[in-house]
Image 1 (cartoon, rainbow, N blue to C red):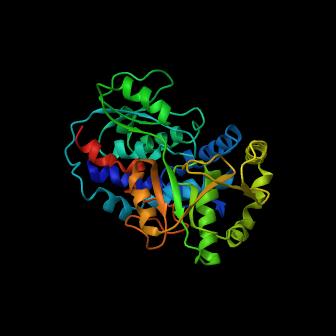
Image 2 (cartoon, rainbow, N blue to C red):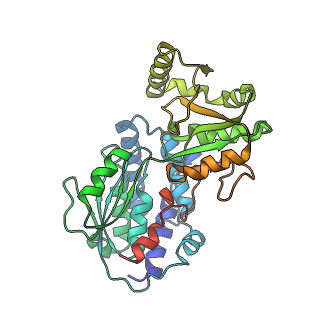
Image 3 (cartoon, rainbow, N blue to C red):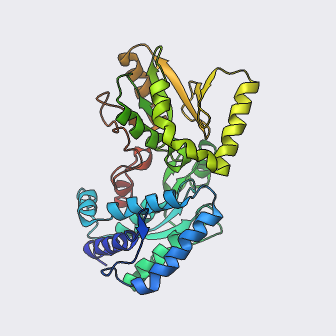
Length: 352
């Protein structure tokens, strides 16, 4: 397969995914092999939702919408433009996937395949329902993918490179096990937002999506706020009001109750609106239903703090604060070239 053929296959995959949207799941006429895959994938979405309590219909379909947009030809062209995959010395690349949000390992999957390599996939037990049927859809477009895609539940063998995503703790094991392999090993990262106190209600509402999408489980979910000294959280809490329905979700409500009880028993100072606890803390990663905050006295010293902690941060949400910042409300809309941990996956795959 040529790079142009592979690109065309992912455009078709994007068209297939575009049928599964929050405003309705309905078949479209121009989707290849739809008769064989539309209903089975609809069933797999339901299975994913029932299997993992964090995978709500809204969040699963939001993820699928995002991928359908990313896999448009103009986005694939822009993504691939800096690289040369016309001739490839095919290698087998193992991928150890996380399972915190739906299809969180999909970017690695498409990166390996579009680069012309073979992929060996070890899925998280939390997210096993969606990717295999999408792999079969690609095989239906070109049977050559059958030799390029392999799933395993066991220890991975016979691969030349690896992309592994886990926690700071598991990353140490990955570094040990894969010491003799070319690798990308990802660790915990968190996202933060910088507030000045001058944000409009619309901006704060946009920020609420950065905080609550996927229940805050993604590395692109804002888990900490930096606010000016004596910041009044009243406007921020008012902007969050539409998210009160999160308490109807049992797993979220249990986390809220547990974390609030721990903070109360420990006599930590906190703010609470009935579904989100705000706690002053210097850490970046807050628990579910909790958002950390920290005050700053001047923006220059804050910028120095953030620059010193770049390895711990995935997204910095702000308005005209620093280079590479993310606009409010946009953390959960990454482009294909917005790489996890800021490690260029295609550059790695181009040189293995």
